[in-house]
Each structure stands twice: as structure tokens, then as C-alpha cells.
Length: 235
Image (cartoon, rainbow, N blue to C red; front, side):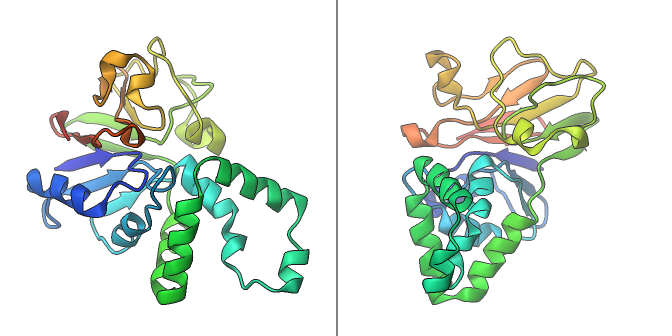
């Protein structure tokens, strides 16, 4: 079975593992795609990253929060007078942007891991540096495209690989947005479903061409786990 979740934003690892256990998720038969934004917004997500980095049947896609984290990877270098003096205006702006998007808990959590177990820390960084922007897969003869935020400036004749990172990571479709017309379904998070309309609070939005699975964990909702084989929703 193929499962997808997104925008966990530091959701407690134990609670997420309980959700996986409730559907019988196992390494031999199942695969999980996490569509980015495991970190920030009140909880650091370090334990989620640590867990995902050692799972053989879990693929993390890059989210905009992971992209901001990577843009500030200089924060984990050795701090000394020289490195501080070389903190350019550009780096300060990158840090300011990340902090404004809830980075502080993540920064603290990763620094703790770096201090206690550098090998684990560098495993996490490798995971994020290698995280793809998209995945294309076929499940039960149905084609899915997995991304974090959507496809900005969408054209049906445009290859997925031609989209710029920001067009994937920061896209925010609305309820009238239509993507593919050939039956392909775009699956994404990034925009909490309750922001489309309050009636979707904590629930996925499923249309003919796309599915949004950002349940709004930071608003107190439980994450959505979507099974692509039959589009069954669990949370």
C-alpha cells in the first residue's frame, strides 16, 4: 500500500507512529511519502526527521520549510569570530525569513542533535539535501504527481521537471484551480484545508484533478494519512 502525509510541523512522533500502526503500516508491504514541512511552527520536528532518515520505506519530499532550513545550514557550522564576521546581509535575510516562519524550535532541536550525535545530525541533513521536489507514480493504473504546494503557472504541456522550486514549494491553488485533464491527480499539502473554507477543517479536499492533505496540524488538527491505492483517508 502507498500512503501519503504532509505538513506534520513537529507533530509528536509517537502519535504519528500510532496513526501508522492503526492502518497496519509495515516495512515489508507499505511505503510512505511525506510531502514536506515536517518542521517548524511550534515544534521542532527533529524526532520526525531523525525517524524518517533511517526508514527504508519512507521518502521525504522537500517542503518550503525544509528549503528554508537548508538555506540556513551555515548556522550549524563552527561559530567563531571569523564565521560571525562573514555572516552576510544575504545570510541574515535568509535567517530572518526562516525565523519569521517558526524556525526557532527546529533550530534548537537540530543543534541539540548535532551536539549529542553528529552522525544522526548529518544523516538528517543528507536526507533533506537529497529530498526531491516531486514524485510521479502509478498506483492501481492511476497516475499521481506528489508535490509540496502545487504547481504555480500550470500548463498541461509543461513537464513537471520544468517547474521552478518556488513554483512547487510556495504554490497556493484555490478551489477553482484545475490541473491535469488526463486523469492524473496532483497530491499536495502546504495550504491548510480550512483556509479554503471552514467546512474543510481537518479534512482533505478531493477534486477531479487534485487532493490537498494539509489538515492544519498547527491549528490543533490531527494529520491526514491518505492511501493512494483506494483514496481512503485516515487521521
